[in-house]
Length: 184
Length: 130
Image 1 (cartoon, chains in turn red, blue):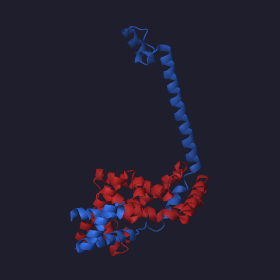
Image 2: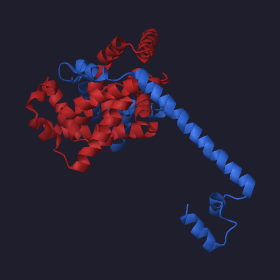
Image 3: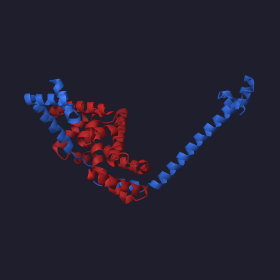
Image 4: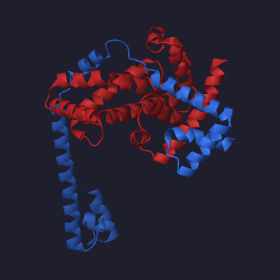
């Protein structure tokens, strides 16, 4: 608990400094939360340049609207909410434009394969997420990959807790089947 | 068995009540299949938790390069000015409506355009001459 309070105070301090024009403080925030946002963006969008764009846009939007961050939630939760919303918008755009599938994007940008293809496990997770519907993917990314509590996940997605719990159960059922299938 | 599997799934993320916990524990003690399912789900969850994808090298540098062109103070100033202008505009419209209602006792279109003294044909001519 003590560590959490200290981390919160540190974030609040940095946010105040950024609002005052200190870009080094903002750089510290980006470095601290880069991996967290990578998990969200790449979990939702797969290994693609779109994920990198969403990641960048997440921090830029935060920077532009720094005055609106009141500290009601943790900075990680706040940034994850921005990242999830941008990722969901990107997925909607893909659907409406009938973009290339995840798999095709993966293959069409060979230089980005390395980022996700750290191991067979990572590749399996990526492929499993790809097969999951958006509403299930988001809860899996936040709860299982990111480690947010179910309550935090519900806050980020602005969903009732019951809906999140139900989607998590359903998502795990589906993932079991998908993974067994992929491992064959 | 299906409802036990659902209970098992719920146990990972939700608070089970005492009766549900006892039921699940009893079932896990009696069913190797359910225990295997529990182990498989635990393993799957760990797998997802371990994965840590990364952006391509230089991500924070790319963000900072874009950010250098933005001044948060300017953005804050524009936002606060816009907010004041919007609120002032809304206040002016409300004041105007209150004034019209106080003067004419109505917020009809005629009252708003000030054409209620005219016959319909005169009102139309006046309106199009505005």
